[in-house]
Image (cartoon, rainbow, N blue to C red; front, side):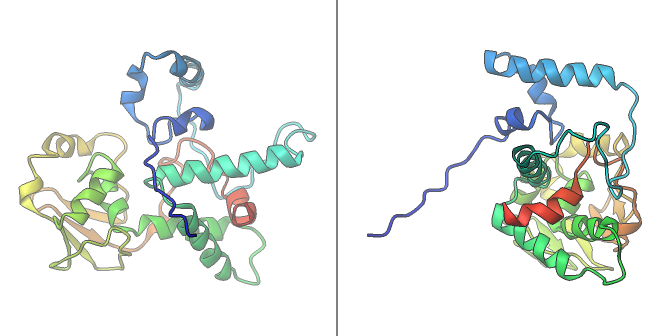
Length: 245
């Protein structure tokens, strides 16, 4: 007898409690008043007050703990790796675990024999997500969230090089022109007006907000990832340990 696994939608905000991180920078989360959110909000608000000055992080470096005996336990390493992968999956629109592991394995196959560290692999790994069509729409401020960008693509409101596409995982290449249907202007008009505010769109995108078009330049690796990710991504742990989780 075969059993069919039912896919149940998991609320995104509840997944932030165990991770102890507002991964998607949702301002709505700060207005929650239920009792289960009080410990999380207390920890998160205290951390924001403690670090009022933003300190950029170089995600290509290997971060060593201040105390040598901490973080060497198997259970803690397993938990840290699992949480690091979950944060990155939620950051890019709650990706499926199989798809995430597939991207990791594809990245590791491109490792050069002369490379002594994982800094280059980390940039190649993040580049795979930054080239996606839904991420590009979100980074260009054409949609307030990645999920809303995916809805635009699925409903045929986005075209690449003049051809409509409904593939939200479409990988862009250099010279591709992404166009948004003018009928969607009223939905995200206020959000588009705030596009010049922080954080600004990445340099590998040339955006025309009058024609609602994006030109993809394909120089993602040259951009600094320190500003876009306010917390440590732990890419080394993800690339080495996550495929075996």
